[in-house]
Length: 216
Image (cartoon, rainbow, N blue to C red; front, side):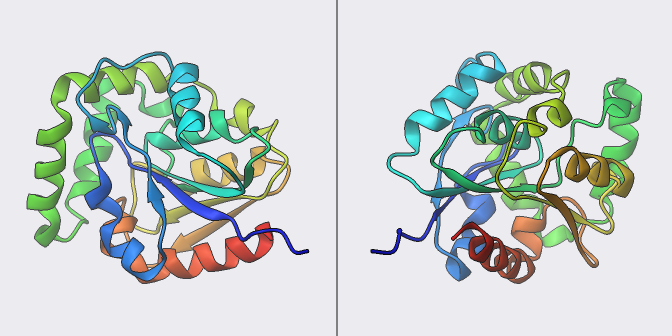
């Protein structure tokens, strides 16, 4: 008897909620788990507690975990669970070079101007729901964590995806994250910036299909 196909479980990025992956889920169905600072305006616990909340929401496996931006830290921390068959990290953002506020601000601005303006109301609406307090707390809870150390213990396939115009996740950082996982690889989405889920759902859906094949 063949094992069931993995379910896709998505965790939104910093301040974002289920709306960020709506266009993707029209193409590739999946579940969304909201967490404090990622769709929920709740006090943000330490990173390992966030990972515990994610695992508690998974239900039965197998699953492919998909993180975006800041939630990649949480997904990486949860990826050692036996229900996880593969991991997709979209634009992981904890490059140590960005811990200085002025560096983060400069890279955010350089990325924001490369995003299509039609999505601004969608992003602002999600940020408003989550709130600046939870977003700030999430950044402080996750930014110092070493995602490369976490991924070194992950034995399932790990796909790191970045847009070619993304300055929050530069190519050298994305390559370093991918190389830290025993079964890691890097893919790039041409013309995309940071919000690949919203702006390039077809490309992300195609990558998920290939990753699900590897997870069978």
